[in-house]
Amino acid sequence: MKPFNLSIYQLALSHTSVAEANAGTGFRESNERLEYLGDAVLGAVVAEFLFKRFPYKEEGFLTEIRSRIVNRESLNQLALKIGILDLIRFEGNRRNNLTYKSMGGDALEALVGAVYLDKGFKRCSQFIIQKLLKPHFDLETLIETNTNFKSILIEWAQKENKRVRFEIISEKGSKHQREFIAQICVNDQPVATGSGFSKKKAEQAAAAKCCEVLQITLG
Image (cartoon, rainbow, N blue to C red; front, side):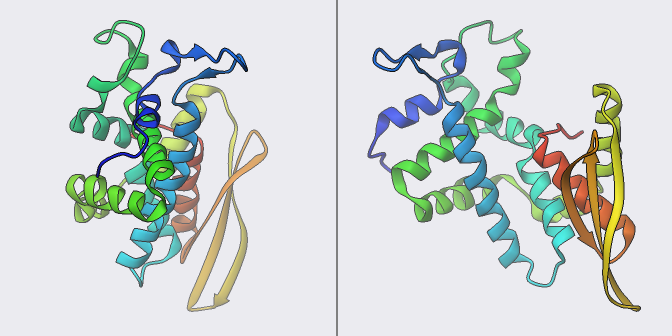
């Protein structure tokens, strides 16, 4: 896939530590804006892929699997695996700097944003699925991995001195097919909701989405 605009890919791999101010605007260009865009595109493509791949799975299941794919730790590991870390323009000690070790996922999202701007959504979607998702993620293993997102969120809250509240905000359906909607508030601010056919599954789905929104590292 030959790029149309090479400079946008160079920008995707430019960390804020090497950002240079634009002579006209004074704005320091780095990969952060592309990261923002790529995060949204990646999440949408993975969500659609899982939606089609698992047509009979509930929302909570899809949210949890998506979170396992696009969480920060997962993207950092993927960036390391495919060699993106070696391509990042960065000011500092590559071996010892913790920022360097964690910036791979950011650069990967920025790269996705660059592909989207350069090639459009269809080609970018193909890139994500064929070059990132299918070769590097075993869906069966992801499904079998029993990640307790609620515990991860509670542990994060304790470390960050945050207050987390789980609550069931609604129920719907028949007595034998009851669906619950859970909401998570952090410091009394609603962050995420999730649904499931038990209170536990609804809370796990909401916690998975919350971890994704807050970019909480898993594992």
